[in-house]
Length: 202
Image (cartoon, rainbow, N blue to C red):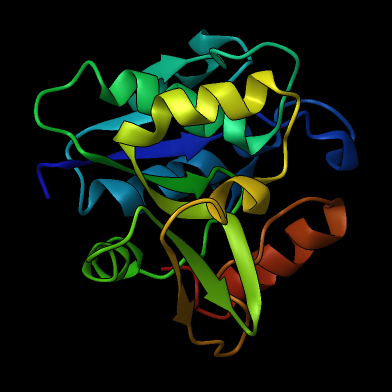
């Protein structure tokens, strides 16, 4: 998987959690973003954290860190573009695979399955229970200039960009909960803590 690098998207503003950077919040005594990092690190050697917060708060992860290269909180695609520009500086990296910093239970085989589904595609997105998860995707780094132009035109919708290219939705099974469940609110945090207590956090 040397031609694939990881990107953790942590550029959100955490409004529904009441302020602060929710991905630093402990879940079962481990920060949310650390749980995501650990899962990606099991398959990938190179990982970027995209955050617009104080980078010193994330020093414990020992990843490269970059703020959005596109101004104005343009949503997840700004983070994807940031990851693509970073990957262009690396040797032989053709793809980036993204994961949201507030989604700690994504499948353990996420990286391997997404890569396996990438043949003849430009973008692969994860799906579950009939829903697409645009922040969980595998993206060709060669799309960077196109994405830059798309954002500069004022467009922000992920699927509007995705539909311009060869793409595939890789479906993941629902078991006792949706593996792409993300922690947005205090109530979500309680649910996530219960998932861990029930032994489903790994």
